[in-house]
Image (cartoon, rainbow, N blue to C red; front, side, top):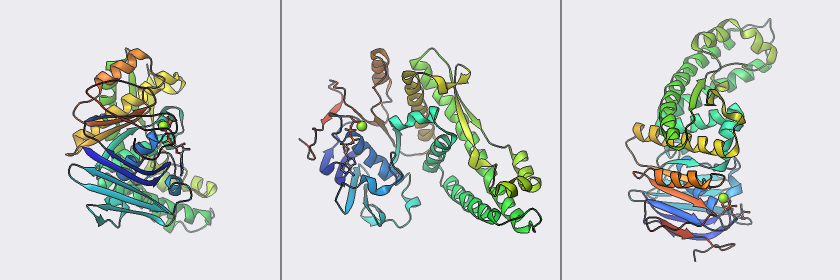
Length: 346
Ligand SMILES: Nc1ncnc2c1ncn2[C@@H]1O[C@H](COP(=O)(O)OP(=O)(O)OP(=O)(O)O)[C@@H](O)[C@H]1O
Ligand SMILES: [Mg+2]
């Protein structure tokens, strides 16, 4: 359980110190008061990245040299210093050199409005999700993924200067290496998405009478991938890049047996929320560690009925940190109010 979040020069917060004393924390405040930023900071500690920008310096408060995030759980103290020179994480005051050693140490599952792109957006969004989530539970996947990306880069660089009549020895060696590690990624993705499908269906059932399916769509199956690498090099040489492979994988969400991409905003939100709660289940079952659920603005666009159902159906075996501009009242929930344009806690 997270007990404390301290931010220095992070987004609009010059100095913010929050203490959580409950399994269910609700951060309330007007638009722009920095609610999302608090969740973003927790997510940053978990993944070493922001969920809403690829540019690390965006999170540093304007005109400031660096940002600091500190998070205390019951067991550990995490911190991250972010500057234009990079980011330095520590756990229990010990600096961690390799970012990959920090990723997933604190386990969070986040729902953010950006996640609606999982349904409406391009395959790369969905691949990003699968890779990010698998990284949290499977260090081998993380290292295989980085090996794969590395070989792919080399192979593509090699293809840039290769003609149809050139010697293909190096291309074939790189191709075989790509295949060997690529099929490991595919097999993990397949296993993971099957589990995710089961859990997501289960959750979704509680909110809706409709049916949802999560289906892995590998770009190539193993046999086709091998064939592509061994016999179909011509295509890659012509296009000067590795046209096919797991780097083009996708998964699709089906709503009543149709691709969900044409669903309404509320339906989409509910599906993504179900997917995230499903993810939470899968990850909890895979790791022997607590997982924290972050819900950014999850209530908007859901009708009252679904909002209430949602609040009642939230898992009670994990800490849930949620924010919204909607005011709620409850004795069971810790409510934190952020003030407009105010950097200090009131
Ligand atoms: N690097 C930065 N430096 C200073 N302020 C920033 C920086 N980045 C973002 N902001 C501002 O921080 C404020 C807080 O943003 P945040 O998204 O956390 O608000 P929010 O409370 O979640 O709002 P909403 O209810 O609209 O979702 C915004 O006013 C934004 O313009
Ligand atoms: Mg917000």
